[in-house]
Length: 188
Image (cartoon, rainbow, N blue to C red):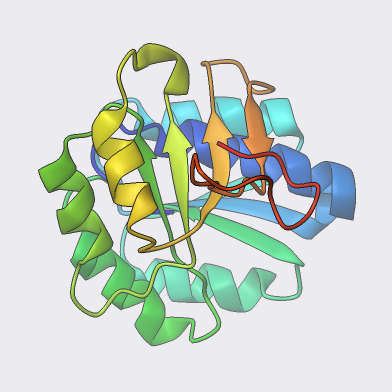
């Protein structure tokens, strides 16, 4: 997962790990904190992973990340938490050593239109999905709504609060003039 600082990436990682541990079993899931040098970031990852019951590891550089991926590559789900700085560089490093990696961008619901456009059009990054965080803190997410209607990338997860269980998965964006979604997937 990638995105700007303070977007809620670490909590989204923990939510994904918890859901994966329920589905796959906690022994099949791992969380890796990659290159995040913020004070307290590693402690936060450890606490959130402990709540999910999954193993967590810390990779301070790309060599350590490669070793961890080789050592734990048999697991069915490995979620990598990246720092909010030098996002494109960290994603490029991961893509180079893990060709099957999927990249998801986490964006707070109140992000500006310019930030949204910049993140979604980052050169050389093909986002698999958009994850919206802090929906409960945004009173007027008009920029987000505008960018979503342009169809850059689909929304896979939405979080409404700071508790682990305050989130939804596999949402589909429905335009106001459509009668309903193509399936039973809830609409944002």
